[in-house]
Amino acid sequence: MENVQRREMLAQFLRTRRARLSPADVNLPVGQHRRTPGLRREEVAHLANIGVSWYTSLEQGRDISPSPEVLHSLAIALRLTAVERQHLFLLAGQPSAFSAAKIVEEEDISPTVLRLLEDLNPSPAYIMDWRWNYICWNTAASALGVTRTSPPYASNIVWRTFTSRPEPAEYADWVAIAQKILAEFRAESMQYADDEWLQQLIADLHRVSPEFREWWSLQDVRERSDGKKAFDHPLVGRLHFEHTTLQVAAHPGLKIMIYRPLPGTDTASKLHRLFEINMSTESAVNWVKSARLLRESDKTSMKS
Image (cartoon, rainbow, N blue to C red; front, side, top):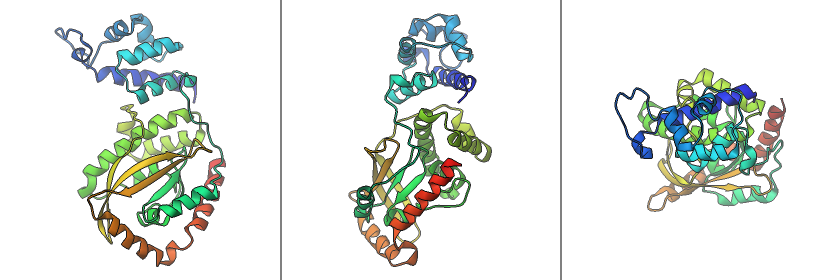
């Protein structure tokens, strides 16, 4: 990523974080005749104990280099979350302030991990890389639609989210899920901001998705967390899951996503039925072979 682009992203991030705070949030008097949404620049500078003109230059994207101490003060003044604080440091060119995952050029999934995915059936599970591409998955995940689709980003989760929007009846759920995915993707992808493939993905998403363009400008970031999710499957109806994320120790850029049936629902029995249906079809035979072929194809596309 060019320094000019990074400075502009830092400036936008600071402006959006300042705009969401009110004087009351930081124990400052509201006063009268306020035309600025959120805090004024001088109020942020006061809270961070830095010069107003210097902070203004930072918000204008000028060529200045804030120290880790100044960034720390700004993070406190702007009430940033832990993931927002990390994002601030990365935007300011201070990635060493936090331990970032090493960029993985080629994934080499071990047979042990592949067997783990298989053993998790009939609970859906898949592995994604730092570009948010599906790398491999088990049969249960395939039954829920985890598969390779059409180019240009055939296995990318973010691309599929914003280019395959569901029917209007499910739109409200889609908004919440898509915004969560986007905020997590933004926080994680900043660690690899110089990756040309990711830059092209983001540019293409701006081109094809009005929602992506609008929400990307909000500069929201969030850390990945456990949660709950529901799917409507045409064969078995609604499925309720709780999901969690595991890190692959040998490859910090890889994550294992696991969806377990939510207790107190009939999801477990539906999953067993769906798994049996999927296993009986020709499309579900030998998922390990398909996953490895997909991995080799993705490696080729990543190098291009």
